[in-house]
Amino acid sequence: MSSREQNFVTGVYRCKDPIKNFKIKIKLEQDRTTLIPLPDFESAHADNADCTSNIIEKREEKLISWQEKIFSPFEVSYYTHIGNCHNPLEEKYHNEVTTLFKGCVPSRKIFTYTNADNFSEIEHTNSLTSETKSVSTVLGLGMSEMQQKRRFRRNKSHLKEIRLANRHIVDFSPTDEIKKTNHFLQSSFQSFYILADLSPKESSEQEDWIGRSEYVLCTIKYETDSNIVYVTPDFSSPALNGQSTPYYIEVDGDSRNVYQYWLEDASESLVEEDKGKEEAILCQLLGRQLDIRQMKVGTEFDVPHRNIIMMYILGEIVCAEEFEYNDLFVHFLFELPKGWSCSNQQLSGITQKCHTNGTGSAYFGHLFETHLLLKVESLSAEADSVPSWPQLFVEVLSLDSWGRFRVEGYCFLKVPPHPGQHHFALPTWRPITNGPSGELRRFFIGGAPGFEDLSSVGIPATFEGAHLSKLGLKTTGSGTVHLRLNILHQSSEISSDTSNLENSENRNRHSFLLEQLSASTIVNSVNSVMTAFKKARERMIRAREGLDI
Image (tube, rainbow, N blue to C red; front, side):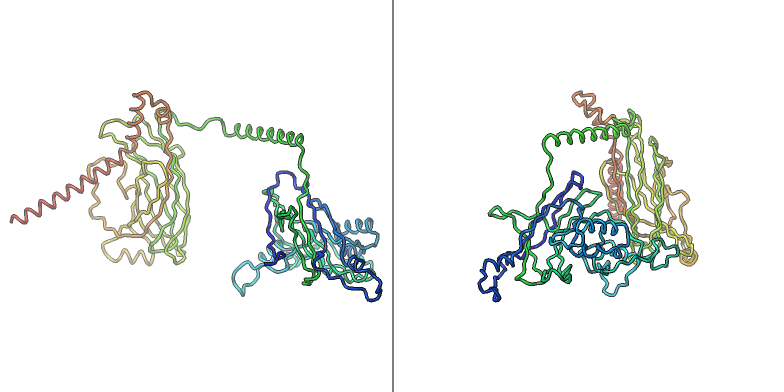
């Protein structure tokens, strides 16, 4: 690879100081290694050194501040005539050009375009989609126009004669096309371009060379929201010999006419005294912000009362899949057993209606939050007073465009007693009738058998019997509901007991409290194991009796 084959890397810097303090130093000179000195045949007595000095140009150095306007030779020739100025900015440039140059074209090469200038180094239109035959919309054209502004001199005609513009600034009857072209989105970027006019100056009397070969040396963009500065290409990196590595530009593709330039960060650094003052001011400002935040938030957390356990449930109904009909929505309800209460009274909710789009899955992403309270006095060491945990009942419904309402499925879940994140895939079921009339009515006009009380899906908290019989209820399987729960436990009892574990009484109380929090789950597991064992024992006894006969 040649030493001149280099990739322009964008440097990203976070700007702590105001952007107006940013300065960059640029050095531009013609590469001497590519020049071939030719003898001057008209003056045979001329030295080769004189020929070389006519070809090689002097190095040009410039210290440029942020948004500093430096006019190019084309701009000087353009803004000299008042007829080319159609807005206040161009009139301002006209006054500056006539005052500074007085009709003379500058010989310098480096110039700049500020954020107020209508310039961009991008010439092509960015496609917003991957379609090769896509039709551009009004919004797409507006976004492309904001991403790239047209080059300065492409949409301007050079007028030598003085002619005032005959147009109205305010159009009281705009057309639809004018409305579309003047409606742009706002951008939070500020752009600054540093260019060089490397056009060959063959004749100083002719102006045909002006603006022929303009090249972008550096593009600087400042993001006002996050105070980030993008420098493309990045500042010149130092080489092994201590000198900075230059960037190269071939003028009009001619390898014999090459320029090289360097970019340096010339922003002035603060002295120690000013830096200390700035840090002191920032510390005072930060202290005031912390004081204001502390006044709004407070110094302590909202700790629940003594002998009360607070459980925060942050849940999300993720999706429902494999249901029979589209346009699904979910109704959910928390049922609190004895000893529980709710602080925010948010025990039920309903999601938005979601279409499956033929994929079989309806993604809701519905978030809900509830705060539940449990009194510690309800926990005791007796076996018959094991606390029961809240239950979550879920009902999946559908409502199509014809107004046909259907019950798609039911399911319920006992809230986990352990804090943390929990994921559930709940299978659902729905009741059906004995004959085919129910399914026909469900298909044509909607409607289906369901429960008036949603807690009847599981075991209602008001039920006090030993067995809950649902004999005669005919059901069929349905889809699956995916649920995510984030559970947090908070109690002053737990925090105080854990801080005083040296005392044996507090240690026993703390362990008893934690054991009781998960006792219901243990008891339910034991009951299920015992029930399965009894059924297996009965089957074995019946099998033995059959063998004896």
